[in-house]
Length: 88
Image (cartoon, rainbow, N blue to C red; front, top):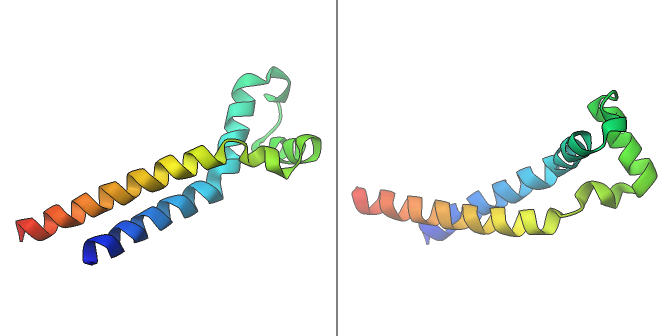
């Protein structure tokens, strides 16, 4: 039971973090690809993307990131806590 609780907490934390900061990842990618945006700052690019392509564009590709990170964190914390319990 404890392993599952820790794994769920780790997964939830990872999903929350990636959901919160994913728009900044989208901005970073746009800045790397679009030479016209390089002179602008992060928040100007964030606003530009939201106005031009909509807020959904900031979360393009979010689903695959959430699934992979959520599953990865779940397995990591489950195994970590199980091994920690066995070691005691």
